[in-house]
Image (cartoon, rainbow, N blue to C red; front, top):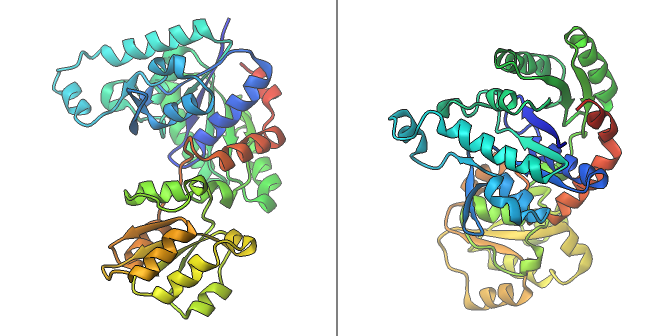
Length: 363
């Protein structure tokens, strides 16, 4: 018989996919066959000829689940689908039927199945299958991921619990993620008090980690919809600091932060040449992840040649430095299949922070 768990969240950016990755890693240490499905896919990509939710595609790629990829993202919310559903062009029973069929097939093939929701409890309501309804349909115990804090966590959980209760879904655990390390014990103590009368276990996941929150070079390139030039093997490097190269070259170089993504105007030939020339030095390479070269002004031929020869990762964009800086500072990074450094770290942290024995026992 296949054990299964539904990974819910109180909202976006709680770290739901990080928890799913963690549970995949931990479950595979105990069970021979571990599967994954994301029933509702709001953010889709092409993966090996299939249109899939990006998180399902990542799981397929990272954990070699290509054989089941056609089952892992059964209901994709592609452009125009919600209008077709509301116009009656898609049968009202179709989402329920296609999701249940895929889950039943995966249950036959696996000993442990992770079912990941999308966003908060109400996502999917537009096609009659929100997260709470899917959890109820699949009869999977629910683990609800939330961000750190006390008051905000209680408010968000209560709002979502109402929907899960209405759907008769079985919420068994609240997992608090992105905790502030020095407030961890106190936050958990108060949250346990808050939910003591509801029969719901409160547990914790990770402390807030800039490494997991910050984007990789590949994510930046995808966000800007531009190619990442230079050494392709460095695409998974994490950008912990985003810095404008506005002062003198020497001052910029001397004040680089940890793993800096440097935004430099294309007319600053001397700074581009300096950064490129120093790229082969290990200590400097640790501090400078790559360059974003912005603006309409062309670089000189010799500057461009030095840049290319150095193989330093860079993105060329015509927007101004200030526009690019503002866009990147507001960006929230998601984990992708090429983020080897982040995924390896998640697996190591999962073994330290997540009590899989307790989660497994409650299923």
